[in-house]
Image (cartoon, rainbow over all chains, first blue to last red; front, side):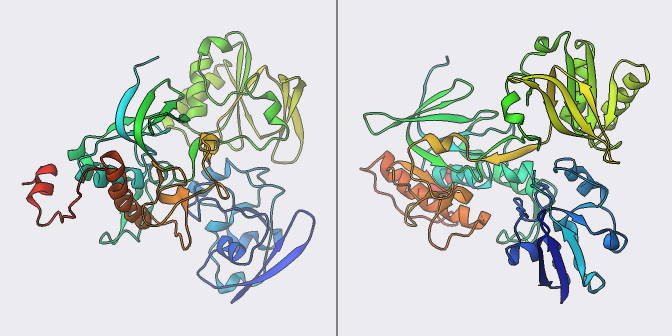
Length: 106
Length: 342
């Protein structure tokens, strides 16, 4: 299992256990993390699971693929560390990952 | 206004479940009209994930949204449904003789005995850009579609987005507008490469402007836009003067006018029974993702089952005298004749 911490815009932290192989979005939905809508259910089709990856983790997580980059065009307040959490696959290396949720999803 | 179409069934929504409803109704000799707000069949399968593989359609180990749509169209061909694309059913009225009058935003009217709501997550509508207070400018200075190009003659137009709609309207309005500015988050575009090249040529020629950044604030009063504040990647902001803004942020699903049809709703879903998949209004059925009942799973295969049972009940409503004999397509020459294979 990998630990993932979500920080909401007010600064509140929530840490959940996530199974390697699943996605950060799935971990959020399973644990009722507020601020992740995931309308399309993980098809990279809606940009409502937008998160900011903590600067310490951007290198390990990597950047978005072109299709995800296209979907990010529809997200709100996109920053250099923006990712769609449905496209971040959890690996043992991501144990301890920290992401922030944006003020709003699309 | 066009003549009212008199029919037995109108299906609202041409997604996989709406399409399969045509099949099940067709086996019972009922021809359907199908209305969809998109310009093509397939619903979410066509709009959200045409290329994505689906793994839980029985007997199809893997199929893409587009293949599933194409297969369903092939399957329902013998039943010759009449499609009405790019139209949204806006009105539903009960007529005194237990029929329904449906009207669309395109001015079509249907006088029908049965309504089948197969509207999935609702109708696809342009996504509102995530800018605070944008609602106040909608219709006056913020437009999600271009109905009349002339309306933009001599105006300063800000087009936002990087897809085909944004690029197409940038190219089309450039000769007409006082100035067109294209605003996009990054210097990469999803639109067709040809349009992107044409856009870049216009930028190089000094005909239009391209600005990279995200719109964060609309400046103006009473819905009349004056400027748009844009945030760059480094966090700095600047203003772009604009009379009109055309944001192209894709489509999202909204329940839409179904909410106004006097149906019982439960969290934007339509409750139905699990025998006929009929709503609390006799004659109006709801199948697929839009309905709700205990144990409901939003799966395409569930929608197919619902379509089959709905069709039996719809047939009884259309002709109460009729005796429906249950038949299999494998053995019934009657069904095979309808399918054009006998």
